[in-house]
Image (cartoon, rainbow, N blue to C red; front, side):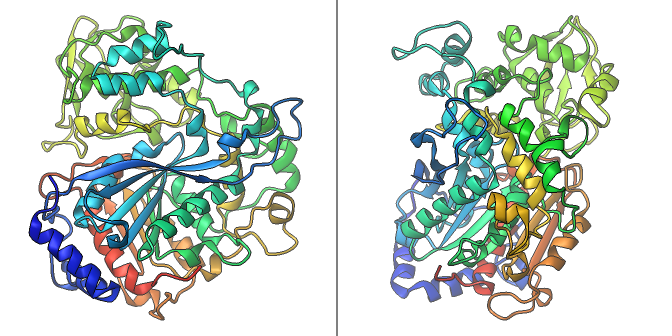
Length: 566
């Protein structure tokens, strides 16, 4: 549904009154935190807003060639680009948009991570906020032909046949999943490359929306990248000078962290276990892999399952026809080759729900299994040895049962935060996707040596040798909005205290950060796990508890950190 006529008239009136009037009215619509408007929890969008989506591309950083590669050392020109999925209210012109929220995904994440959040923020702001969800350049390496065709044709089997049965589609056959050896240039896609790509998108947003304040947010690993961008010295400006606020979703930097030596970074390595890495190892294996637990084909399998689950064209309660695709994974997950019968909905639930998924960064609260016995995962000790701490895990224990799925959690009478239908849409809805197939290992390596936000302006090997110019953190004058989940990766909000102490205590407009609740606003959501902060249901009262306060905070932050000229 498009804007009703009075709303169109009101939007035009605000445009004619000018930005100051629009901001004044925006502040008057803040929630009960300042005594008027809705409460941020139950205040769902007051009008129906049709949200459009389009792909944005801009010339990005020119990544250096891999100095150790004998061939294909340089990044192809078509990959030196920055990408985003842009969400905007239909019928609202670019000059009517007064805020733009640019969002960086986390580890193995794509723009689809923010699909639900983006649509809800556009709706909650009555169309005056646009959201740009970043797709890192590695997403351009994915062959989305089969998934796009399956979505367009409302038939998941199109994707299954293309990727797994060698079926030709649009005159093309799937060439197989990429390997590190064929992409040595990815070893140079580190923090500098990604920060410069991000800056290219922020430049594009400033050009497209000349009257808008820009906000930068990140989820998980993105919550470390966002403060690094804010602290980055681009020469004529620092990153924070282009922004009006920072949003950290289940992620945070780590001021005060010990810095490895240059030799550790380059050759001997640092970290522990599977996480131990160095530039030398990255240049030999630039694509991150979770094998043998998770293989790249499972990323496509998850999207196929999501299509079958979603109400738009799936059959969520039908018996899954895809056990041939996920049998090995589920067998490893639960320690058995004798799999029970699963509905499509149960297959997706067992793969991602927090009670069953051992990887904390991949967990979402989407309900519980029905139809058979559930108990402690007999393979938990093996998974802990393979992956590190996994917490308490459950498993389906009756191989003769037929398992289905319900949204109500097994340990609580109320529904879990996230509706499985919403999560399914996030997984498959294109033209981008939720999972990043080919994550560049160099990015995590570089973040590990810069997320302390203590790079020195001179005499620091990180800046002088590798161009990691995150030197301006102490000057950051932006308000911050941060969210953690009580069962997620940021369950203790005191972890944010070092970052709060490391940035400027005075906001851009001269207000003391400590004098306003919006200077460094934090929210801890009970029962939320890592992905719930992006996906918890917002279409029923009381709302998901994150999106409403976020929109209110942005309204206030514009006043606290007016847009700069850079």
